[in-house]
View 1 (tube, rainbow over the protein chains, first blue to last red):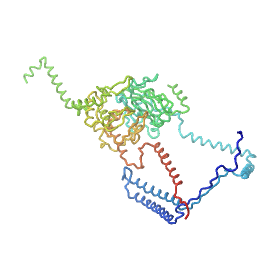
View 2 (view 1 turned 180 degrees about the vertical axis):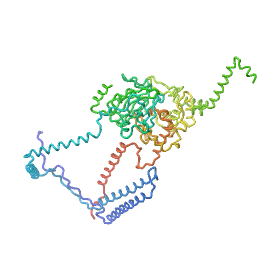
View 3 (view 1 turned 90 degrees about the horizontal axis):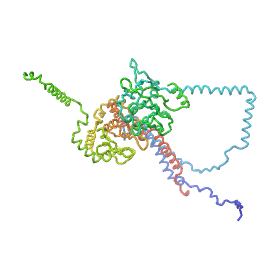
View 4 (view 1 turned 90 degrees about the vertical axis):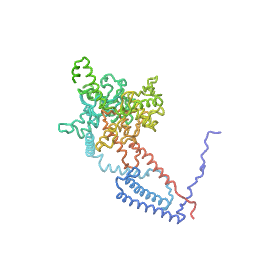
Length: 349
Length: 275
């Protein structure tokens, strides 16, 4: 036995089988078959045409409120006629191409994708000629002023994009303030602790959203109202007091097991109110962040990074639930400067 | 009259007058005072019949006195039913959720085990143990009285309070740990109202003080209206939303088209020889 490899023989070990024999279609060998196929395809196109006319008839004739199997009858007819007609045209064209059009087998051999060396040299010569003729290297004043103005073209873009919206750290405050009543969303009714049972959930808003001025007009309206509502939305829940483990300093933020949290997820700001009354878990439907409202809104699952901000509660003279301050923690999604802003907010209070 | 006036200073006269006054007031109160809905219907016989049904069908989990059974670890084997009221029994038994078929993350609704009469008796028994929410009356369930404005407001309330879990057309949705918010299709207005009042399983309570009986009626009227609308967009697919629709379109729809195109390219009749 020697370590040397056997030289590869010139002839291939398995013979190149070549190309398979060309097989003909029935339509190629039998003219009557071809005629039949031609008739079939023609009928498909004719029926398609009739269906398009039927579409117009359905548009005029079928009542817009009529239903068919629980669907709108007119929409159903539109789908059947227009969809059916286009399907028949498509099937007909494919049949035509596959059965009747020319049946040549084409073979294209592989070859390198790059251009030839002569072409490449010629192109580079042209480019270099262009550079020297334009004087790009020879006249630096023109070149540099052009580059400078192009760079400044970026400024309008920056200004326009900067103006698209306020920066997040201007938005850390909400309308909540000491004495602001909590009201039920939509109906605007203020809430007393006795209205709430253990296991209750209220989707709430600050009272100012439903306040009217002397003329009976809403105090807030338009964009301002929407911004206030979207930032200040809250959920109020009631649990058994023994199920709540408040953090240090938050012991008096609830009333007999009634707690109030921001409704805006701290991940990317979806409104959350999927509250499980037995586990006290609040689930965000967007990315499954889960907060434990019995444990200070702590994140127990999902991509959210900060606990859900809690609103300290109190009672006014008439016994309605009020806020004792704005949210001490910044609400809504995190942003790069959040830690700095939170520090500023803590120093102020 | 003379006899009466001569005795008006009798030492017992004061007591007699007080007694008469109490009887009058008590009698008028009994005749006029409003009664809770269950008290009107439930007789002592119903309560007794309900107790017998309870002992056979429910007591193994909820305890012989409906006070619940606590496990050694401090969890509930079956929760206490004291104070849950007739509404809770009518919902849980009337929708077939109770009796529970097996221990699972959630009790599903199924064919009720008890008929309407037996459900009423069970509800009467539980309601007799402690005061609790009664079975909702017409105020909650008479959807015919809801005007177009009412239905619109019911829609706003539904979107604020219910869509997070139950989906914007009440198709239901998933919750963590195998739990789910069930579909609201085909739920009777009475069971709707009972679920909002009592908060079954993980569902929070929506008390009458915050969401009034009229609000509840409007919410139900809205859901019924939305679910009764013809579907203008073809197959609704359960209204589960754009993610599910997109997944279906990309994988089944576009995938199916690709497979069809490959099939068309690969097939076609061929014969051996030209004649």
